[in-house]
Image 1 (cartoon, rainbow, N blue to C red):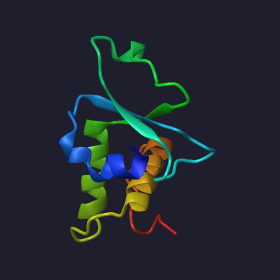
Image 2: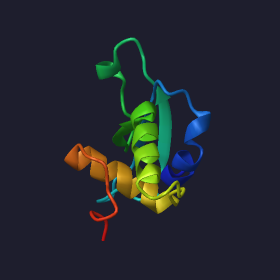
Image 3: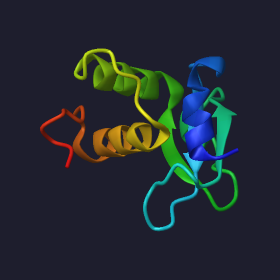
Image 4: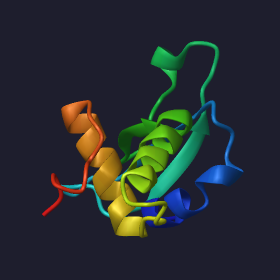
Length: 101
């Protein structure tokens, strides 16, 4: 499954899961991704081979909800979802309309 497909289906996954994805060199909707349940020790949850941690499902849902709220309820495309989450991971802040360009 790709990262874009994973994010488009995000509501079907357990919120207590991680998204791991390939990063080559940046996050992209077309890279391979995998959802992995968070174990008893989240710090010890291993990344699938060739993948890096992207985000927890529950955080991704918050980021995407904020993105939509700041855009009058519009649903983001797969690329916009990846950009919003990558921005959040880098800046610890929502990607607001005036930040995107």
